[in-house]
Length: 233
Figure 1 (spheres, rainbow, N blue to C red):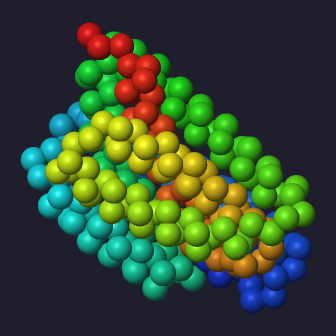
Figure 2 (tube, rainbow, N blue to C red; figure 1 turned 60 degrees about the vertical axis):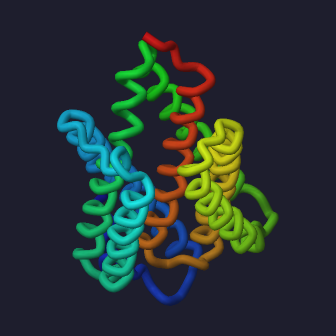
């Protein structure tokens, strides 16, 4: 993390040279790795204290979650060029860890191989990230045009997920999980290439985008693995 402030806190420069792009990418990967620490701590505390805001009222829990998340997004954007932006990002990842704890706790308590499923989901997410980041780095194709279509896909996933709170259709739930893994895997490709091509010169915002991609791949992969490979006690 020694070079995170070489060009200021978040804004690495307005001229997108290869040197700047490489530095932004290194800083993004470093901050992404650091962001996993508060995520794990948040998830551990959530499991230890049984924190699950979605359990009693999934729809209300979703509304509260979105309100807090977008509050963090706004604050991070406003402070992306200062050290406060880093602290806000780490606070957001801690919050996301707490939100993940319901799924993690359910996996550990409901399946005898729950710990193995979590490690498998972690390994699968890491593999997906490595593949997509490598493609973004070496490919000569421009994937920027995928972004708007992927965002449409995310909106449809949100609508389908909310509808399934009442419909409770297993087939729809599985479809949402599979599509979410595919869409956010593709988002990793788009977001990493945007940094490489100089479209994002702020490593805090770049980290936020890629963190959300990785988070959604992991949670949906873990939920899917629990359904198809979980051993009930």
